[in-house]
Image (cartoon, rainbow, N blue to C red):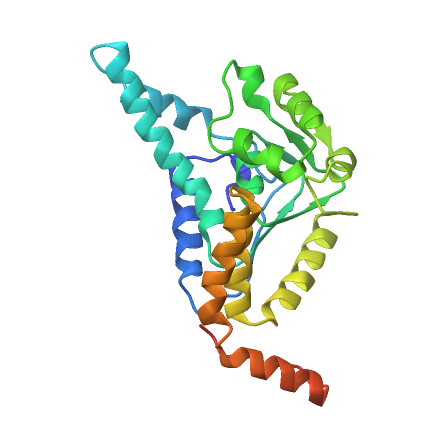
Length: 254
């Protein structure tokens, strides 16, 4: 993300371009992993208040019920933009530094993997602005971390939380010395992920996201149906031969 003068706060242009870029990369057969990071001194300071105010202004109708319907439709569009990260066929790694507030938390909880720099500060600031987070944080944050008490403490208080605490509670899997070190670690992991079969990566992400929201038995049925065709891929033979020959397997793009 590259809106450093506004601390990468999400406005119409940024969130639409981000969503379109992720969707395009998802359909690009050459892409096997994506890193989401940001320029400047903050990852994302939330949604741009001018943009949010304009959305509300454009939604005004003759009565509160009609206005509410218009607002809901606009919020659904924002939800879809954020969810592009989760819909993406390939894994997405978020690299967080500096402030990650409000909509920034929506973005990173929609990613597959999260790394942070030691200066990262996370906050569900919506609560302090007299609203409830409405672009994915309330739905994904608790599933990412699993600690209901801590997630609710963070959400209900709106307090800022440092990188060490967030990592200890599972929001981040790694906390590095600075932004550069965090990106280097993410790039190394991205290359390791990209070395795997693209068929396996698509299947693994698809099933992981599906299984999070379904029972174990439903998840097993889902991956069973997927692997009924995926296990017939030539990539399986390539992987076995690479192990036997002690060489690195090379897989064709999707």
